[in-house]
Length: 187
Image (spheres, rainbow, N blue to C red):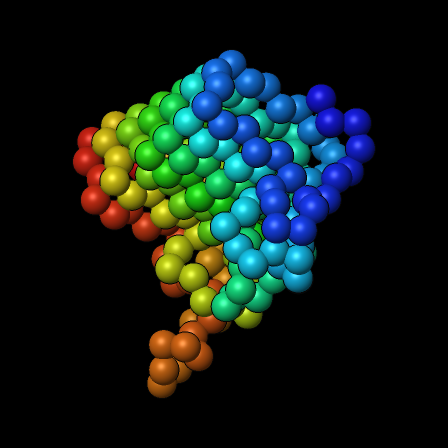
């Protein structure tokens, strides 16, 4: 259990969990922050690699001093199956869950896109409201997946509906949910 707010040291993740099993992180609504001004990328507020059977709950994950050209991860998960990510808030940075099967991602809020790649994911009851000053492909991206369920989510890509002459001048995401290379999926 986290008993207070924490901030990552320069050039490191605040919480780096790897090569273990059966881990539970309960932040009790405290924050874990990473600052783009002191990190050149490649780190996250919470990084999970090669972990089996885990849960992340009650966390407010914050990326400070970010811009579209220079963002950092609030949550980065890779090769970590059988995880539960619930009741968290993601602010300012991106969320990537890759190569991780059998995930439950529910009751989270985010102002950045959530990208999920893995089989048999349940993605439900999340609220994703993107910042309309940046360009995104979608609020929720599910890719390289089979057997997943996406339901009861509220998504707002922040797109202003205006056509602009160049791709770089577009803002928001005109796609709420983007499915890429998926099969046997319920939306």
